[in-house]
Image (cartoon, rainbow, N blue to C red; front, side, top):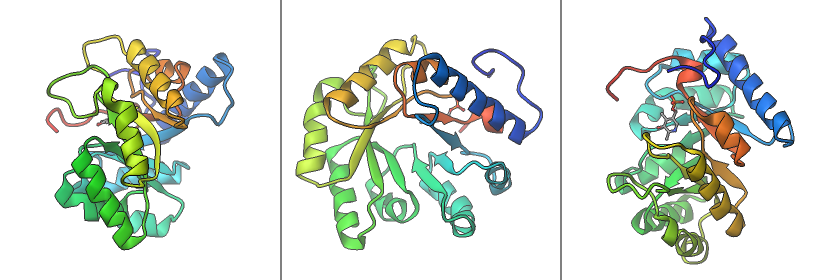
Length: 233
Ligand SMILES: *Cc1c(COP(=O)(O)O)cnc(C)c1O
């Protein structure tokens, strides 16, 4: 994996983090958006608490994890030490893990089906803890992929708001790996806009500058900050 401009990765985590931040700033300036318009979600999945702590020491405060169990082992102590950390769930959520997810995460980016929305609503009502919710959209309409189909997004957003009273703030997508992501980014931004949603989570290590040009407010970057992950996840 290379960074978008194919420059070699900096030798230290702090250096790589600074380089990603620099590219985010440069891209925002380039397309005339405000300097703070994009939040960097540092994706620390598969990397240990030591790597997360290194990123925290370098000033990073927003992190993404894709597994509830892994996050539970890594984050409670770090969050206690740094109460301003914001933890995003970016992987699939099973309904039997909703209780743990609502307790630990500040943002759940992968609300992708009615049954999950209902379970989240129940748990939020029970505990009073209300992590922000993003709806995952299957922009590529891939059969094996989670997410609401584009044609069903407006109705699902409305149901999340009106029926389940979830704090829905945005949309997220993971474009098909074998396609140019630009049209998926454009589609997601357009769907967020027409539903009055402010948060648009799209773009990863290989394509975050493009996502920013299309209006991303959150980019989820792992490899370009933490280095390569083990091949099998
Ligand atoms: C792993 C992951 C990322 C980060 O991917 P990189 O290519 O390592 O930056 C972003 N979003 C989701 C949903 C992921 O699972």
